[in-house]
Image 1 (cartoon, rainbow over the protein chains, first blue to last red):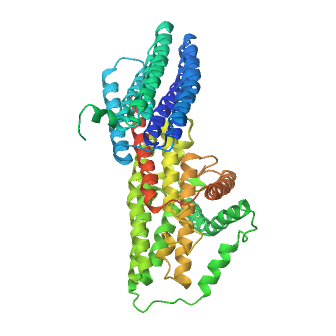
Image 2 (cartoon, chains in turn green, brown; image 1 turned 30 degrees about the vertical axis):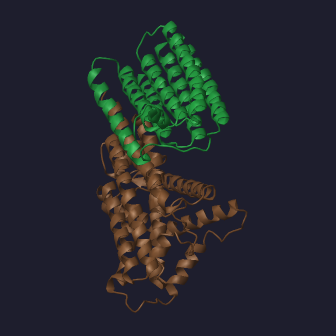
Image 3 (cartoon, rainbow over the protein chains, first blue to last red; image 1 turned 180 degrees about the vertical axis):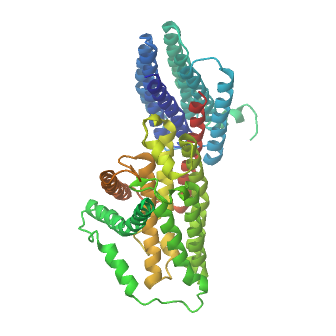
Length: 220
Length: 318
């Protein structure tokens, strides 16, 4: 039973890392959002599975939050933002896809080396969840670094947050209050960023963050 | 006596792959035709084509060297050996100790090398174009294939295909994300290596982006028959490889009884049927890629292979 439990959580957490790679690979905004929704669904499944094997009912609430907010509300809202900004045909990456993917692989390897060494005494499932969660967080950061469009940077940020939730549920005994407050702060951050996007757009006529660099007087 | 029995089984496998390969090609064509609402040629049509090609006269270009004449036999021999060493209906056959997956990749690689040389031998522009593209695809597909082999060999603890298939059939494999990734990557590599649709179109001689057909454009008669048969064998090889590693249902071991072997044979036919039907379905539902997008397609396979290896290390460290 323990073996199967481990295998399934390995499958779901590994799937999350793979979907992070798909996020890294997508260069069209709508498909980026669809993949992000998939990311959130897999996260919800992983969290629900943790709730089942840890026998911790409050994690089901976390899973429901992940499913409701991250898989449905936020992608729909971002969809509307993209429609209203009229940027659905834009394609942008700073460096080439190939190089990004190689850097991504390097980051995953780094996350595994670090986490497996640091968490020597912990339970196997927790260790493995932490390693994959760190990989997802680093990949989220990479998405934010390699994108120029503010909307896809938001998606990178949200996927990073998914990694944090994975790490938190892998470790035993995170209180529900913390979880709910994190979820709401993410939602508020999302709203703030959404308003911010429209402000950037109003002022600079674009959501390309290069415009901000130029406004600060930096040269490319 | 036991030695003779083992020898007969191995011989049976060699003849089996040879006789089934054209039928598989016919099946894929039939499925594609039916899905396009055409009637399509009979499944036996490739056999008739080969028989006709073997009877036909061989035309050689004036400036063809010995290499051009020898290459078809080399290619056919290398691929036939590789296909005969892959477990199809039973593991642990007489020569299965040499059925190492890296050796099989090397055999396929040498066949491809000779095909590319033969494509350039006559000196026509089409042949050279096909050869250079084939080499570009190969240089991308082989690293991906090696990564897949590494991850599978790490999981199974061996590179001998028979041992790997036996391990995959045992219940201790469990659910592994690495295996899923390796399967997707292997399917991508198999599509590219067999010149199937997203990478190359096997049904045309006219397209400017063709790869495999461009190289064999100058061949005729029995040479062409051998090369086409080798291509069919390669397709069969990849489907049996995927079947024995990822769907080892019904795979008999060589010293099992006749009933188990027959059951393995039936299971193998079913696997080939499913593989051919899925290939046909996939090919009608996707468009061919631009040549310059092939590196991205195969790069995805490489990344998946790398990820499979990495993820396998996480689960192995406990």
